[in-house]
Each structure stands twice: as C-alpha cells, then as structure tokens.
Amino acid sequence: MMLDDKIIGVVAGVGPFAGADLLHKIARQTLATKDQDHLTVASLSSPSQIADRTEYLLGQAELNPAYAIVEQLTQLEKMGASVAGIACNTAHAAQIFNVILDRLRALSSKIKLVHMIEEVARHLCEYHPQTRRLGTLCTTGTYRSRIYPNALEPRGFTVLLPNPILQEQVIHPAIYDAHYGIKACGGATEAARTALLEGVEHLRKKGAEAIVLGCAEISVAIGAKDVDDVPVIDPTVVMARALIREASPEKLKPLISEVNLPPRKAGRCAGKNADD
Amino acid sequence: MMLDDKIIGVVAGVGPFAGADLLHKIARQTLATKDQDHLTVASLSSPSQIADRTEYLLGQAELNPAYAIVEQLTQLEKMGASVAGIACNTAHAAQIFNVILDRLRALSSKIKLVHMIEEVARHLCEYHPQTRRLGTLCTTGTYRSRIYPNALEPRGFTVLLPNPILQEQVIHPAIYDAHYGIKACGGATEAARTALLEGVEHLRKKGAEAIVLGCAEISVAIGAKDVDDVPVIDPTVVMARALIREASPEKLKPLISEVNLPPRKAGRCAGKNADD
Image (cartoon, rainbow over all chains, first blue to last red; front, side):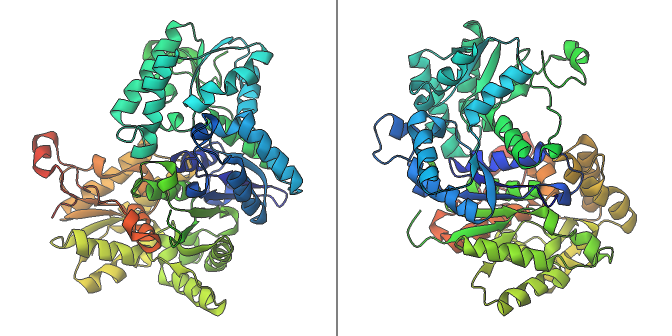
C-alpha cells in the first residue's frame, strides 16, 4: 500500500454474507501478488442495529435504517476510512440513501460514499455500451422503490423486472425465506438457486440482453457461470472496483469477462475483458 | 443481538482472503434466520503494515509482525471489540503470539484474544476424541516453528507433517507462489488444489486419521468435500466458533459434520455433527 492510498470502509452487516462477499471481491479485484500489496479495509458488521431495508420501504418498519448506517459510517471514518460502501442494493433507495447523505453532511463527515447503483450505471456505459435491455433481480424493496429503473432509464437503458407475482412469490423468498432463503441459510440453497435461475429465464424471455444481480445476497448465490451467453452484472463486484478506484486506482485489476460462453464458443472471447 | 453480547474483532489482513473467509464462517456458524440475528463484528484488514509471518520466522524479515498486529487489535478494541481473533495460523507461532500477548498486557488491553491452535486442540478433544494421528498442512513458517506439534502432542495427539521436500516444493508454493499460489491468485487455482490434495494423500499414506488445514489460505482452497472418509479440520471454522462462543454462546450453531462420506455411506451419518 502506498502512503497516499485511502482507507476503504465497508458497512458489512446488510447482510453479513453480502459484507464478507464484498470484502472478498475487493481483494479479488486488487492487483496483488502478496498480502502486503492489498489495500487497507475497515469493516463493521452490526446488523442488529439496522432495520431491514425492504421492511422500511414497504412501511413495515418505522425507523429509517439510514440513521444506524450513518452511525456505522461515522465509526468507520474514525478508523481512518475516507471512502466507503454499503454492501446492500436496497439501502440505495432514495428514501434511505438521501437521508444518509443529508445526515453525513450535517455531521460534517468527510467520507466519500460510493453509490452502488450509480456505479452500475457507469459500469454499463463503460463496458456494455451496446446493451439496452437489462433484466434485474432484486428484493421487493428495491423492486417497488424502482431503484434500478430510476438510475438507468435516464441513461437510455430499459430495465426489465419480473412480473409482480414472480417477484413476490419466487424472487424475494429466495433471499428472505426463513427455511431456504439466502439470508437464513447463509448461502445458496438449491431452492434459492432454482428460484433465481427461474427469474433469469423469465427475464431472458422478456428480452433481457444482460442480467443485473440487484441484491448483494443474489450475487452470493448465482453468477456469470450459471448463465450462458449474456453478461451477468454483479453490483458487488462493481462496488468493489469503485472502492479500489477511489482508494488507489493503480491497484485496480482489469475487468474479468462478465459473460459465460459455452465451451464451443469460449475461444472467441479469450482474453477479452468485456463482452461488447 | 442481545445487549450483553460482546463485539468480535478480526485482524483480517493476514491475508485478506483468509480474513474475508473468517467473516463468512462467523456468519455461517451463527444461529440466525435474518440479518438482525447476527453478531457485531469489526474487522480491519491492513496487510501492508504486517510483515509476512513465515518470512519473519525464517529470519528473512527483521520486524516481528506482532507489533503491527497489536496496533490493529488496539484499533479494534477502540471500535468496541472485547474478543478477537487473528485469521492466520502462522501468527500463532510462540515467537509472534507471545509477543502479541506481552504487548497487549503492557498496554493494559482488555481484549480477549482467541488462540487458534489451542482452539483446534480443544475442538479435537471435544469432537474427535478417538482420533490420534493428525496430518497437518501448513506454511513453512508454521511447519518449522512446529506450532501444531507443540500444541497437540502434549495432549496425546501425534502430528504428521509432510516430508521437508514436499513441504517446501509443493505445499508452501501452493500458498505463496506468485503465479499459482492462493495468496497471489485470490483463491484456489487448479495447480494449488492439486498440490494440496497431493499433500493430503501423502499424509493419509503416513497414517493420518484426520487432516488439519493448518493455514487459513489452505482452507479457502480445499475442504471436507475434497477428502473422502476422514475428517477435515478447518481451523478457520474452529476460530469462528470460538469467537461466537466467547461473544454469545447461545448463538453458536451445532457443528456440521467435518467428514465427507462417499454417497454409498452418506445415510449412515445423516444428522450427526461429528464423526466419532
């Protein structure tokens, strides 16, 4: 690490598996051949303090999770973090994220907070400029607050979402179900993976040219290797890359291809970092 | 989280993949059905500050990594951590770990530091009391400083290590090689996995009744699923469980079986948590 490298802060408890996954992906996306080459990352996972983001957005929880998130960002800033990320797509709904920004400003915080969804938009413009129709899987909080359409449609993308029944009966439970959901089981159960891949198939039939895994738990469970031919955008990888870029841009690895080509075509894409 | 639950601190940069893996395993070993059920974990990955543990033990680095580790433990204590772990087996060599303990005492630190190798010994006595001959894979630092024999042999276990050529030409490079090693590549390359599984085979031929993955990077790359019939002890899982036990014992999940039985035998062990 160089002396002028910034320290990265991670709000890692929303949820804890997504937080650990972001830390892993920060390390994976860093140019390093030994431990000492890696950046400094402070992380705080204090999930019991933060109300569920979807419950808040659906009016089922009163307290805005923004306040607890700001408290944790403030602790990370005390640890030296000057750039930070929240490993949760749903926390980026305007009703939560704008309150975080207002509160940080009121506290005169100097921390630079990376906006996961804005970074996905930037990433798509840079690496997938020909892609127009994006299928997005997410929590019902992200779905109803239209985080992805609001961020991407002004940039000319069309965001395709599952129909409401599939969203509420298949996709959201893959994340939240107490018996087979990713949050309860700490990873991909077969039931959760099957549900999410049903969502992917549904979005492809709707015409999706790329799939955005718009919930940090979804990207713990499925990835590019599970979907043939179209790019799979993992916002946790995008966030990891944005944090490295802000902390120490020369440490950022070239992007690994986000598209899984079946073996017969694999040669065509060898060495390329993006699909178009 | 209950009000009297303790905050867990993790020294997570030795190396960064091992740190993220420990955070993941803490969450996996916690009884939880939703984010809010999980414990608070503060982690600091600042690997550029900490000299390589094996290099220090082999006399190739002058500064004892203990001092930087203590500094990071002190920062975690400021974040509220009262129990902590270092996600690195080699850092538990007496030449490093005792200096950490002395320095913490001199600083009047109140943090309780979990000793990974002592916890492995305790775990073996509890879950594998019939097992006597333990095959251990580790870094050359752990190997030469005899961390595992020193901790386990007084308890009646026999520790089997690879022969020196295999250790230095196959096992250590699986972790450290700049081209295919786990630290450089951020996970299991096929070459690293092949090397480590060659080590497992060698130890089984020597009579190992269980395999201890005595380096936190090794347990990122291989696990129980890769080794049939004998238990595979992952000190990172053991550390995760010890941290939960110290922070909030009622949150500790029952131990998942550490032995991978081939399909024909799988029914015999269903529901059991340990192999003997």
